[in-house]
Image (cartoon, rainbow, N blue to C red; front, side):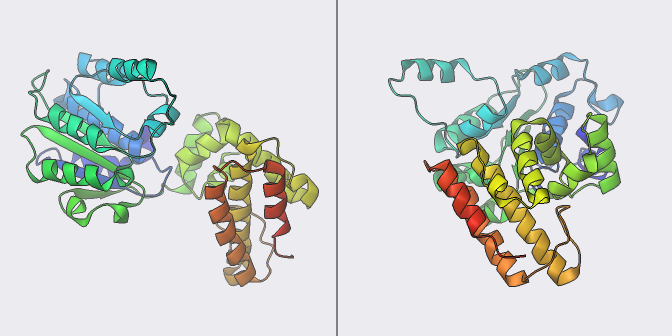
Length: 328
């Protein structure tokens, strides 16, 4: 369970049960376990043996329903693209809409007002199990302005027994009025040794290296180490280590472009940090150089990470990224 890695934050959440706020805002860097904590806490709130320990039992009917993704008193609101990436089960309504649509629409990357209106209907209905109704909103900053205003109305007059768990990577992007109605729960980076041990328990090879590349975020490191994205990152890292710029620009397709831009961005930041302080952040080589040039290159790679979702020629774009690299 993620609570073992984020035990201090978990204790803070459990400590709020005596006077449970109607809305909590879990915030922190991507990959530190905010969503996993929110899901575990939601399960704990709906656990039918909650008074018997500080963790969800995992065996009661409420826990089994939650883990199966069909608890009638739990709801997760997130962009369709996020739900697809996390392999969330779709509702029968969503499947029917897709079958009846003549055009295949691209999944939304925002939380829309219809979803927030549906959430308002959900929390205003009496609990099926005679307990709480728990809603997770993730990532909360990806909500449209219309949907945010609708959510604000619900947060201003929350129905009895409704608990909202907002999860955010960038809480500053939320409406100040929404933030003011939530109790903030910061989720920090875990201790590196504990995070590396947790990754090793997930059978990740070289956990310290992946943890460093992920900036200390263990769930992001796990995703890198076990997914296809990690394989693309490995190829780029080997090319950087060899010093072969031709090999660095070799891409198999568009899916390799964003990992290439990410590695180049983090390499540039490490070299700028090394020039300024003698340290690195992402586990890269402490090769120094012109700090300003490397920072400018890192900013360019950040912009390129956004552009990689556009229909570009992979080879030409990769060549351009590598060609713009400052000299050592």
